[in-house]
Length: 105
Length: 105
DNA sequence: TTCAATACTTCGTGATACGATGTATATCAG
DNA sequence: CTGATATACATCGTATCACGAAGTATTGAA
Image 1 (spheres, chains in turn cyan, green, orange, yellow):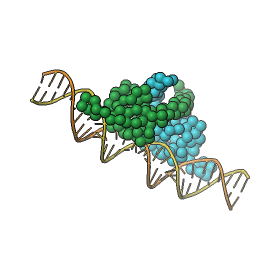
Image 2: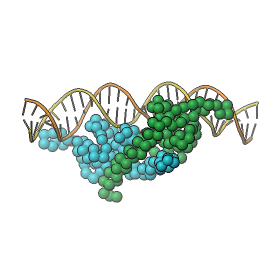
Image 3: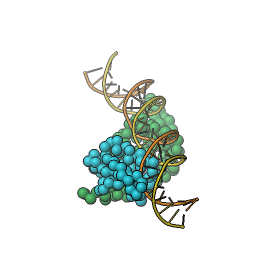
Image 4: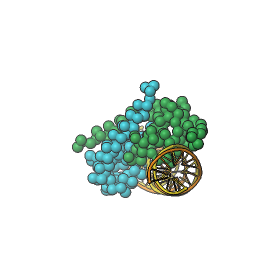
């Protein structure tokens, strides 16, 4: 899938993945992959960014000898998802513009 | 509208605007604006990029004392639009992932 | 012991949208 | 005549960002 087209979806996908219960990097990646290909470096970059924007909080915990960082969504993160849904209407109207102009169908 | 969300739509919008008949920068901008806010510098950057990618061709012509550059779509440009439409299905499936996870509705 | 899976990190790079700024002409109101 | 607005295109610098590459470290199965 075209990178540019992904860009507006990545952040919201990550927030969605931790929306109902806290999760950790590796699991988030697995959960998202069936819908959207995302590399590890991309995910951890996004998690840092979302943390910086106060859209999620982090806690570290040890799980079977390995470090895990659990991410939990904040109200600001939830708000971000809601805003995305509102903007989606605009996206659909742009999609209609693109398909409407196609007289060849 | 969020810049990131725009990114995958801009190129295709511009191609759509010249899909049925050749057009020029200023007119393309006006045609697209009702659907999607785009600055002049962005448009001309995109037109250059699409020209470099052989998705459109350019011819210069004088119109009432002013220079105009007319842009015409190429088969490669048309193909780009078609590919976008195919990718759209993936985008919709991602949108469903985002809304489906929302148990609060 | 070698490999895959789990788990997170950092660095560098290329792509790109956009604001700011500039050039130039036509038109129209005052 | 003057100033503002619309038309029309161009360039530069910057900030954002996705990603590949490479690295660290543990567990468990072949």
